[in-house]
Image 1 (cartoon, protein in one colour):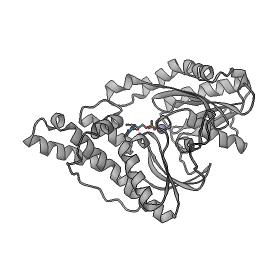
Image 2 (tube, protein in one colour):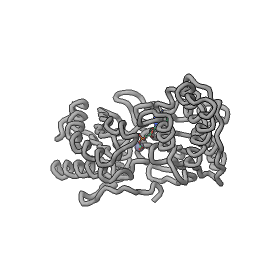
Image 3 (cartoon, helix red, strand yellow):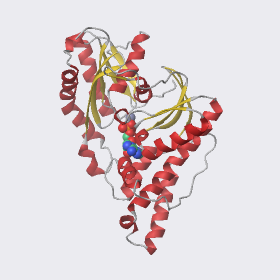
Image 4 (cartoon, helix red, strand yellow):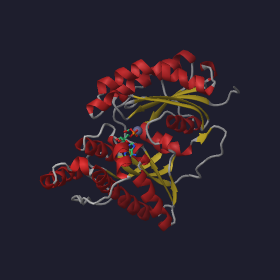
Length: 343
Ligand code: KG4
Ligand code: ZN
């Protein structure tokens, strides 16, 4: 393969072991191993996650090189998620990336996980024209298992949080609600799929938050109360009416996101809006925002489903911008569980 900027990107912040090879912003390979071991526990078990990353990382990286038809000696940079995330998980990918950078004498690029989710909008598929016309500035609703933020993105490294959840992340709320319904982890995709055949007929108490901030933990309490009340009259309701419960819970969790995002777009006077993170795969969020954007005259950027959940291509996208601005990191840097997006 012709030399150019050829980056190996590694992601291991939670329960996905992932590696990708990128030529600039063009994705040459994107390999992801989702750890299914956590499903039985109803959530990610940090100790299991880091152990699995350790077992999988070399095979996943190797596969990314094979899929891209690239030899490791062709690489020109190593990018890796530095944080935020589970420290034990991050350390596996980060140590592996540092070792590769040292062994191959290549620059190391540390990437912020949530910035990577957002910058995935700039990825280009192998040999295909850019699929998104996105450009700075834009507003991004970043929604995952650990974050729910409304972010103003002015440049590749200029992020301002306009609003965020003050307690649970919306993905976490989906997962907790799924547990109440005895659905497996991760619960978001399960609720989304079942909601397609249901009617949002159950009402929950909404929590009014000031400004653009949000809260999801109160909704969980309301889910429990409404379920218990209904179970007194219909003991089997959680089984018999499962799709209706899913549609109702989904609506309750997505509505505040749409409402706050709309407020933020008006406040900032922006024209472009994007969504990012695992919950950006949610069909109700995608269709509701499509309607609002059409009505409001905004350009909406929906990421392909392959780039919503954790992946390494997005890490390569963020690294591309860093490399263009000569922002290289040192191999003595370490992984960080907490990293603000607006620092
Ligand atoms: O970004 P991500 O893969 O990992 C984190 O960085 O957290 O997001 C995972 C979260 C989980 O909470 C999962 O339930 C949620 O994204 N999720 C969804 C959907 N697909 C994944 N939530 C709602 N609807 C979906 N279709
Ligand atoms: Zn993520």
